[in-house]
Amino acid sequence: MFPMDKETELKRLGRHIQELRKSKGLTQTQLAHSIGKDQQSIQRLEMGDFNPTYYYLTEIAQGLGVTVEELVRV
Image 1 (cartoon, rainbow, N blue to C red):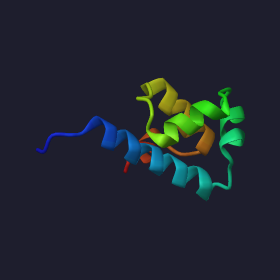
Image 2: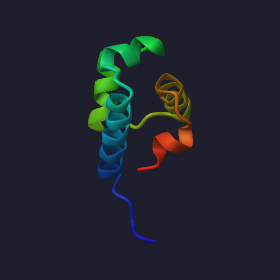
Image 3: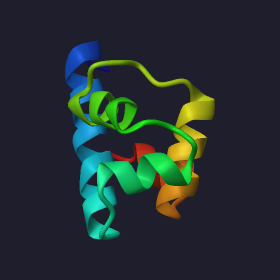
Image 4: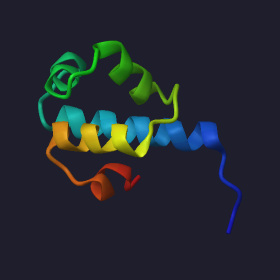
């Protein structure tokens, strides 16, 4: 197995979440409000600027109407 680069993986996850959000026709603000977050936190997530907790990912998945498995499948 190859070593993982944390920064690269978080950016890949963020891009995938952004693609899912856009495919659902949602803005960052709409997604954020649907799960009780602010738009800036969604923006940071999509930019790969922080490492979300499992619980945060479950909230994002719920807001996007997907499973956590689908959310992290990048």
